[in-house]
Image 1: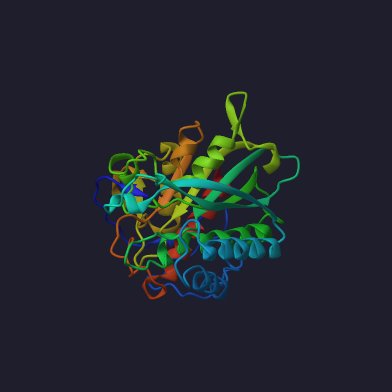
Image 2: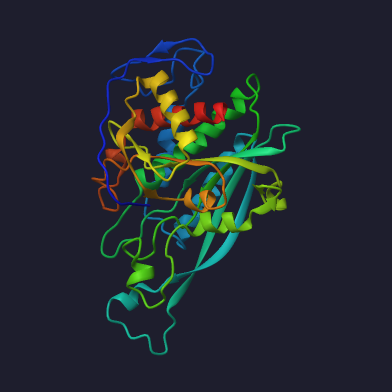
Amino acid sequence: MRQFFGLGTHTLCIAALSLGLSAGQCHSQRSDGPASDANNPFFAWDSDKVKTHLATLAAEPHPLGSLRQLELAQYIEGEARSYGLTVMRDDFTVQVPDPALLHGASSVMQTLTLAKSAQNIFAKLAVPQSSCIFLLASHYDSKRLDGEVSLGANDSGSSSAALLEIMRQLTQLTQSRPLRCSVLAVWFDGEEAYLRDWRDGETRHPAQQADHLYGSRRLAEQLASCGNASCLPSKLGGERVEAMVLLDMIGMPRGTLSWDSFSTPELVSKAKAIDKRLYGGRLFASFSKPIEDDHLPFLAKGIPAIDLINFEDTSTWHTSLDRLENISLDSLRDIAQLALHLIYEL
């Protein structure tokens, strides 16, 4: 993802109330264990599972096209199946700009791009007789860096682990609190630019191509027109896509959500209202900024979308410091809970 400008602040935590459920306390120091209030939508939040997901996702680098990325696709699939979700995969090949051509290599007798395998992973929670669906998404590839290792614990491990746990939660919650639409969890491959910077493929490389959002652009291109809306391809069920909630970089301590100006204003308003009820409005930054991320291809299709991302603290972003020891499970859980409440209010 890429930002352009902006500042951010957060306020104090006061109280929690949402979904018509009973109020719970809002602690200044939140524990990592399961919440004790059975009326809280996250009463069964499994901290141990989340830690396991994070440790697996951030064990080693896993950029687009790597063997480790394929192994993680299989891990995510296995976890999602164990929750009783319907799991699907879209295997595809993308052409990425050859990084060697930015470092003095001759393009004579050399192709401008390299072929890389990619996998988008889908896990569906179906609502019977529903013709609509919400997309709940994360990317799961780590950033490829020249001469440096990025494990992607925050970017993209935090959101991918949270998405697994949210979907596990939803399989339990929907038994007593049905959703209006089905939910399709999506783990996108290839969000990160294969070159160092977001615009290098378009501005510095002779290939002159967009070098980012490979997986999300792939799915957006597969959507079918259905009246005045966009529907999933038939192989994914064909439902009308009503909204998208994207999670990214949600694991930094004292997590602050950026107020993304590209996101659909109505969804931002809903998310801020939930933040106020749950956390006294402390999560969202005070000033907006435009952030390019996996929600953009869906906004271009006219689908309401919101990016729940902490792009206020980028101290470990795309560096070797993006490791497990710098992740806050409290931040991850708080933002994941906001996303779960938002899905119920769409």
